[in-house]
Image (cartoon, rainbow, N blue to C red):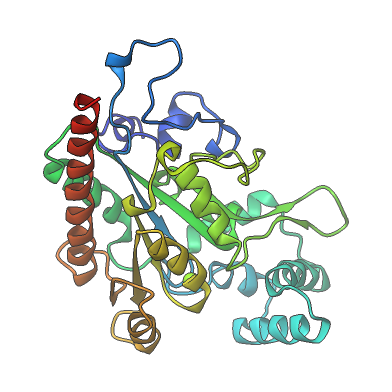
Length: 329
Ligand SMILES: [Mg+2]
C-alpha cells in the first residue's frame, strides 16, 4: 500500500489516504482546484491545474462478470440468482417501487426468512468471493505506468473511481478496493431498523450525480452538488474522463460523459454476446467497445490507451493555451 502512495501518478487512492491516517474520502472535504490564483497569493504562482485524468468504472458486468450479490450473499441464503432478480423486477413493477430500493429490501427480507443474519462485516467478507474479469487486478497499475510513460509533461495525475448500484461493503472486501480514489456505491444503515435499511441507493440516473461530483471536486457526500460552479473552476473537466460500463444501466452516465466532451467504453463478457455493445456504439453512446479482458495488449487496454493519448494531447494543448492567454494579459 505504501509504495502505491508514492507512485508518480497514483496520488490519491483510498490506500494512500489510509496510510496517511486519513478517513475514507467520502468524509474528506477537498477544496476544488481552480485555474485562478488563490486569494492573497502572488499571481506568478498560478499553475494550469486541469491535469487530472479520471477513469470511472461501473462494477457489475464491467469489472466483474456477474452482480456482486450472486457470489456469496444469494448462495448463503439459498436463493437462485435468476429467481431473485426476477422477483425484484416483478415486485418493483407491481408496487411501482424503485427497483434498486426493492432489491436492497428483498435481499435482507429473504435473509431473515432463511434465518441467516448478515451484518456489515459479513458483507465485507463476501467481497473476497467476487470474481473479476481477466487482468483487472493488474489493470490499475498498468494504466498508471502507461500514463507516466506517455505524459510528456509534469503534474499529470490519474485517478480511478467506482460508481456502482451494488453494495459499498462488498466492494470494500474486493482486492481492488484500494485502487480507487473514491467509491460511490449503495449502502445500508445497519442499526436503524429490524432489517438493514437503505442508506444510499445509486440508481442508473443517480450515477450521473457522482460524475458531476468528480467533475466539480465535491466528493464529500455531505456537501450539496447543486451549487453553481463555472466550467473554469471545475477541477476535472469531462474531457479528462473515460467512463467504463456494460449496458443499459450505464446509458445515463455514458450520455452525460460524452455530451460534456468526455469518453465512454462499453465491455462485454469475452467470447459472449456483444449485441448490447453494438447497440450502444451505433446509438453514439460510446467511443469504443471491447471484450472485458483487462490484460495488457488486449483490445480494451489498447483502446483505453488511445483515448488516454488523446486526453494527454488535449491537456498539453490546453496548458499551452493557458500560458499564452496569461502572457497576453
Ligand atoms: Mg453493470
